[in-house]
Length: 191
Image 1 (spheres, rainbow, N blue to C red):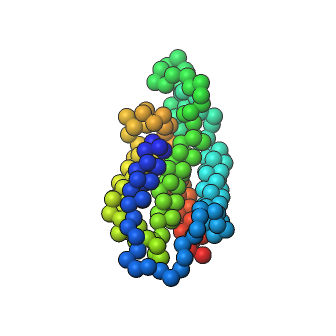
Image 2 (cartoon, helix red, strand yellow):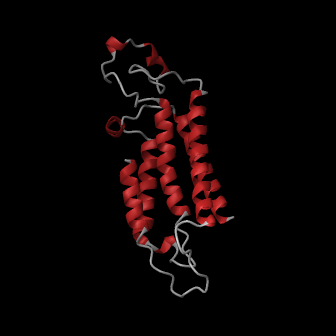
Image 3 (spheres, rainbow, N blue to C red):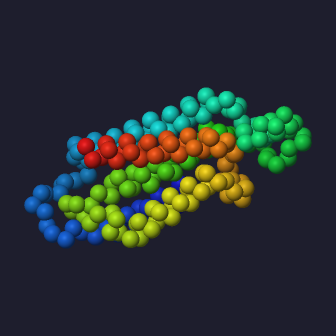
């Protein structure tokens, strides 16, 4: 799903038209300039901080345990099932299914969208991102899709993406982290 998000965003983001007037300011002569590198590095650092925060915060939750095929943080009464009675999930050799991964997965998926919006400034060389209708529609659809699979999980999607169930309160916490990440990213880029 990460690749799909990135491809849709890259394709539609590149459709931004040129600004209607020439600006007297000369565009950067290359991709390596102090302001561009600083901007990219600041967004990388912000993303790393929020992913790391989510990773360690999930481990501090009262319901947290090392995930096993018979773990179910959404139904504490099911935690005492034995592996023999729960054949729903096969043994996970790669350790893909766990609470840390679902947290970092949702935070990072939203971060792709946040960074795309942040870097889609527009003026003085391009039209603003909100005038790029394919990009706007793509961002809205991807935000909506990610929001719904995070807040209202569907068994079919969870199985396909190998997501585990986390309590609704943790989903709200992830949403708060994502919104805070968006604010920090936008404010950092406008300074």
